[in-house]
Image (cartoon, rainbow, N blue to C red; front, side, top):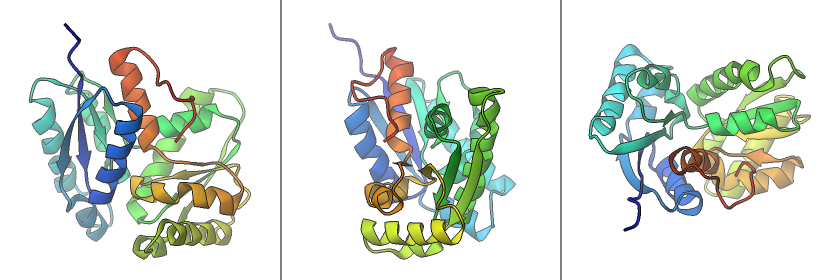
Length: 235
């Protein structure tokens, strides 16, 4: 009798992020059964409030509790970077792995050969959340090793772009205008930006990393005790 497939819950704040996550899990963790929960007002409400308010934090905690209290969920991923700070409190309440959207990507980038890293986003809360998470991981990943220079840019024009190529062009403009064109790697702070990854890498001439595939691989390793058959790079 075959082992039951692990159930992984994914909480989404925007439909585009949900789609990107589905594609990543199908590619990197096909053994998982996926439970998708979408509240498509989460990001809009955070933007309107200029960040996370206490009611928004409670709302996300309720969504996390909704899936974790189902009893058979073995792992959870929040696909919206703006809500990453809620994860710390959730981890103290539930024993199953709960991942922030991009922390696996951040750890991989910090463990890599990059000393100058740029973070790119198209909505303000994602910039703040990504930089805070990246900076918080530096001591545990690098310890007293070589320092890392972190810069962040925002391209709100990328939100309305009608193609991955247009999104990449807007992000490249923001990186150059923000003085981040000397970065050795660019990290995309939102899943919705992932389709622009390869074009942006061509425009900037450096690796561009996104978090969905890395998160799927990390959950696969945690839940199955084995690594992905794909190369150990950030997708």
